[in-house]
Length: 145
Ligand code: DHK
Image 1 (spheres, protein in one colour):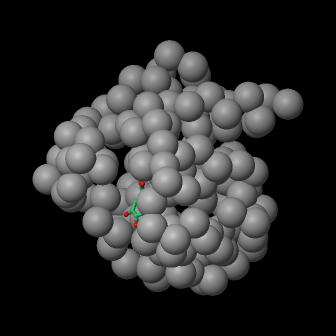
Image 2: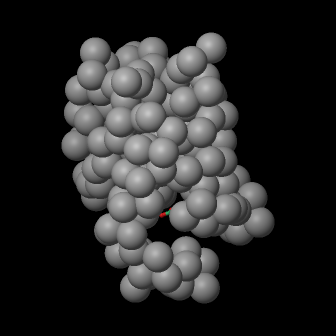
């Protein structure tokens, strides 16, 4: 069975508490449950992780090589700042989807820039927690091709 790493960056452990008007009331634990259930439905194994630390996210991306067939990453604010994450994604050569709960293009200018977009297969943003299952469907279809 194909396997995907779903990686969450800084402050996503605060979902449910953090700016619910922007990020919704669904917690990260709820999202993990949703992803695990969806994985069973579409035959996709799911590993789910979160870190507030850039280097730990880089390590997790490196470790995905040889273990997972794709990555879904909500890199949080590191999306807009991290050349290290961009380089890590490029180095493992795994199909990777950039994900955001909010529509970053409808928000502040600094959220419009993504360092990781250029090394990702595509971007899903603005669909809240549902974006995770949309990304899983996209990875599953891509891996099958
Ligand atoms: C999450 C964050 O933490 C922000 O820094 C990004 C993203 C947007 C989200 O919408 O999931 O700008």
